[in-house]
Image (cartoon, rainbow, N blue to C red; front, side, top):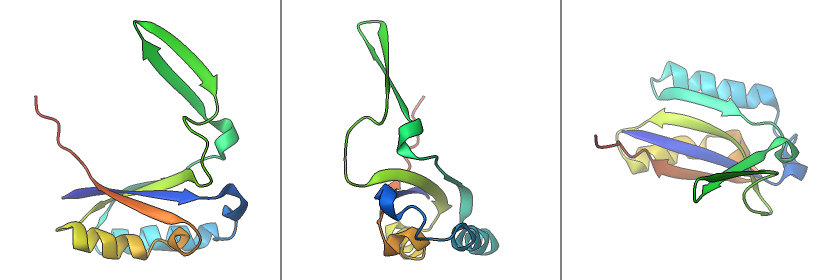
Length: 110
């Protein structure tokens, strides 16, 4: 089953985890067959929020909501169940200074 591990950090802590640690984590997930995708995101000031209401689009600079921790990246993993996904998420380096939200991917019905 696919799980999305969303990495949240206070931007003040963005550089407290070395990129090489995150790369090594991705490499380890790849080696054990759990890695599907992973990316780090640019800082929050580069975000743009798009909304469409009643057929009209609005675009604003910045994130959807102001929070202490911002979305900093993600890991898409393949795990047999939620427990395994949580164990994988605990090994993601930013979990030491931020948080990792683990969510199952919902298959779309067509």
